[in-house]
Length: 324
Image (cartoon, rainbow, N blue to C red):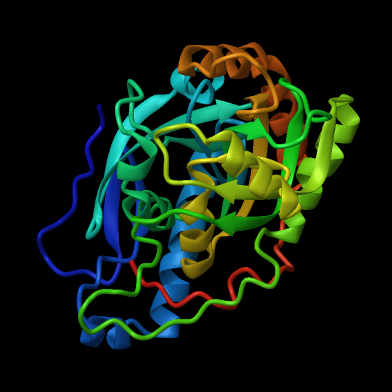
């Protein structure tokens, strides 16, 4: 496992060393004074340093720099495209996060196993803040989140995909904002367009090109877990116009917007939700369905990553107030 090595001396941009490769990132800021001291020009120099250094590294290998990360959980974390990369850790003031650096098609990307290596952290105990902060810290500007979901409609069967367009938050005990620490500013983030239109458009086009069965503009209901939903809950969610139900997309999407990172969600339907089938739900079966869809998932992502615009023209970063 590759650990981050940072200088103890205060720096405007500190070196991040991963497997003998250096990146730059802004140092952690724990007080309002530190946040105020981080000027726009210094952040710009840090961003330029990240891009210039990574471009030199990747161009020598014939890879495309996209600043993209994938987040995945059940079944996704078993795909060889992600699990076979180089592992390392990033430390943030919210905690440590495990990552994989991979070559995906013609692109150099990062993969974040949200449940940890070995799938050992339940949805309600995931340190979502550390994960999103860690991605921002290494210069990621775009995230595609992959998640296994239950279908709230019989027409959307196991193995189908859903490109997310909106969400309903039914979680109860998660830290869903970066801005609840002493001295933090009060931040109210706009969510009139919950998911990045550019990333979402790339996923939709990729699904069409690959000929997969999918729906777009899907409404995702986020529940606390780790238990599955009751039939009554499923009927209620469906009556609200929701299409799929899962346990992890929130607060990922919220934290990414607070961090100024473009974020899109691709859900893989693993089962019909409770009450829509007589079968009992089992986690191993969910993993099996997602793993069986692995090649299709990889094909869609490889297509989508090529379709992502080089220069973002969306407004996802306009609400960003987080400095890591």
